[in-house]
Image (cartoon, rainbow, N blue to C red; front, side, top):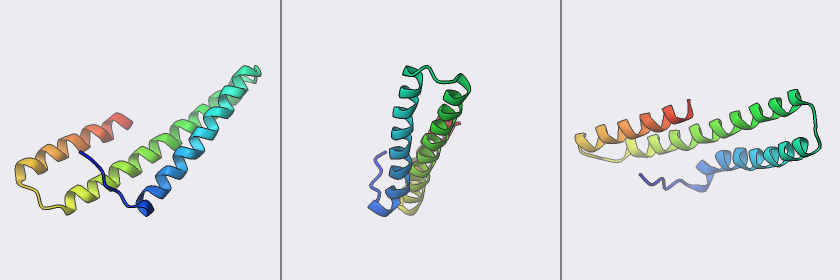
Length: 91
């Protein structure tokens, strides 16, 4: 399944991914500097949430596109199974 998303639909997900990228760089620096374990874990949790939200946004957009397209019932059932698997992979 390929997602052909418009720039506006991707904007929020891309922003979250870019923030997560910066947070990961910060976490690496924190570890290298020997920062407090609790602070590192807190930042790891924040990155994890940002990645999950970006993933959910991308999947939701894909679901919206898939449901808007006319597809035979067999293809729709296969698509539903694939999308369900993607959602669960983020859970």
